[in-house]
Length: 434
Ligand code: KE4
Image 1: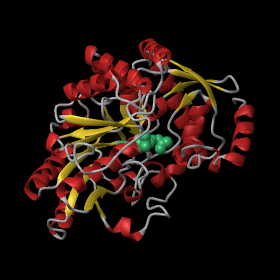
Image 2: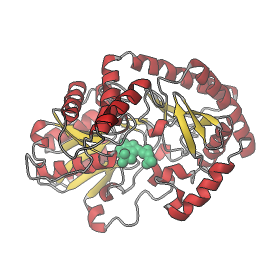
Image 3: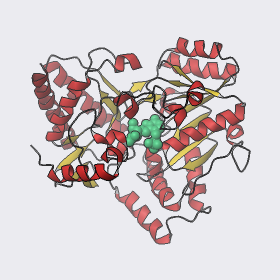
Image 4: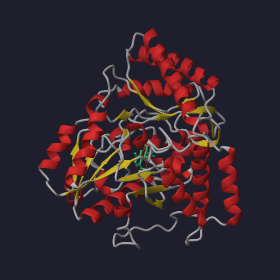
């Protein structure tokens, strides 16, 4: 059993000054119980906590660390940028380079605006869609999470789902009224809403590969059907690729699915671990954005040279090393196969959903292809399993409705140890659960 006295003391102290002791709810271990671990450092595939315990990290800061912690090429880029100045509040060449690089990597993106988080990216993309169409309503999908802007916190995923508050207090009825909810992978549910709100829907926003109800891939007929519907009805199709962008392929989920959205949102990997979000897409739509057009959006630290240098290092590395995706596919498929072998040995048929190097181990034996089938998972058993793995030095997302991430830093030894720990942890969790 690991001693986590320093984490526990820090958590107690933190709760006096920070609501719930954390700066983002999902970190609080609320759904799995126990004390959140406070970390000291990260290197490659590993992190060290304040008590000196070491863990294999499968959160990767919730997605940004495609190359593991502190890859040399990102650290060098940040160090160079710091010496020149971290932020000027004025344009820099880095921003032009970054915009050109993203446009060259994601064909549907003709113009892009940098912001500081995924939430800023998605809320701004919706505002642009509303400004471009002159319409007010949007469609989102139950279980999808697009950040914490008011109009998204209706039947949202991630922490909102984990804590059973998918529709948050504080969101006004007015805001909620303009957000219509459809069912993921159910095209009929979308068509019904569109038909009963003719010419009133500005945008449909979706995670094309969902990660916030656990990992779910949009079915081909579903996502092609939405694309066709948006074309027919003049609706802006927004792919929220904050998690899937540059994660599942160099061109994101839109490359995997073969569907071009009108707007895309990005975050996580695009910042190389520093706070960066972005939204972009068709030039005619993005041109409504101030100061080119009337739709306002702004940000003190948007595109700052420090964050841009980290993001440029990350994306340039991806562009010059496309082979990393076959490495990530190989590692992730190996890990999934190891987990599935363990399930067979233990007489279980739990579902594992994986797209590239993002994966969710669902504690349900039915196929998970919708919100309803995802939430049927046994979250109590997940909690037990999570702690068994944590005690063996494997740091998984502390919630069933999240994705784990494999990085290029995970070695074959790491993967084999993880598979061995998975068997032992699941066996222990099942015996405690029966
Ligand atoms: P941020 O505002 O947290 O940078 O991004 C919001 C966001 C938007 N869209 C998608 C698809 C996302 O996954 C996210 C954020 N993801 C969560 C993890 N499920 C961030 C972790 C957290 O909330 O602490």
